[in-house]
Length: 100
Image (cartoon, rainbow, N blue to C red; front, side, top):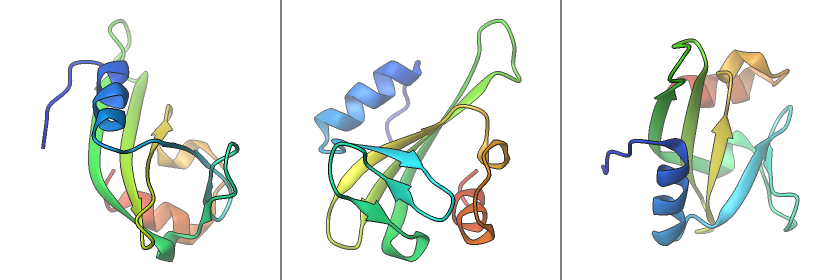
């Protein structure tokens, strides 16, 4: 796995490697607002995780997930405050926590 120094560097590096969909976290799935892609936890795998801490506050962390669907769609999901900050389903918490 490639080590990145910054979140933007990691996002750009993953885009160059084909992770072009920008996923957003919803209650029970991940979605892309630009395309009709909605994936339940059983429909995708997390293939890489990159963690970043804020320069002035270590608790200001971001987690970047590189995601691939069962159908070959590839994208990224950035969670700025950790898995438990958003109101999400138990199944989604479990899926993301494995890699957290």
